[in-house]
Amino acid sequence: MLSSEFGTGQVFWSLLWLFLFVIWVWLVIVVFGDIRHSRDLSGWGKGLWCGLIIALPYLGVFIYLIARGTGMRRHAGLQSREQDKLMQRYLDDAARPPGG
Image (cartoon, rainbow, N blue to C red; front, side, top):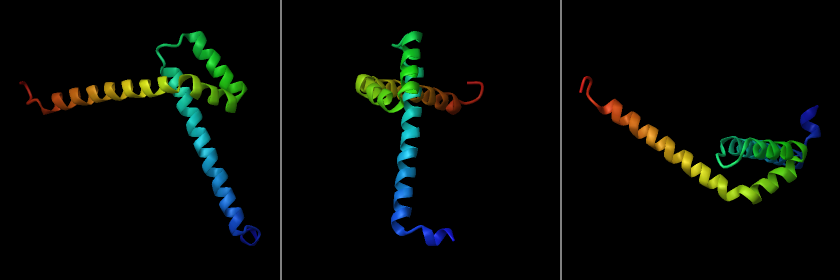
């Protein structure tokens, strides 16, 4: 029976490893998204970063976070402001009376 083979420690370690795996997948998705949306990188630069992350995943993500971590924050801020402008424009249009 599977429940008799899994002790409390095994469940804890399994959940810890699952949690770390989910964090890793999220981090890789965020880094690839930042590479894709970076306007200051050329196509070759984006390709090189993606190649490094695919070839050496842990080292590539670690180097990317060190080299371009502040740029990631700046890109997120710009994207947030653009979404805020679009939402404000939509709300202004929705609040305007029809035909007016």
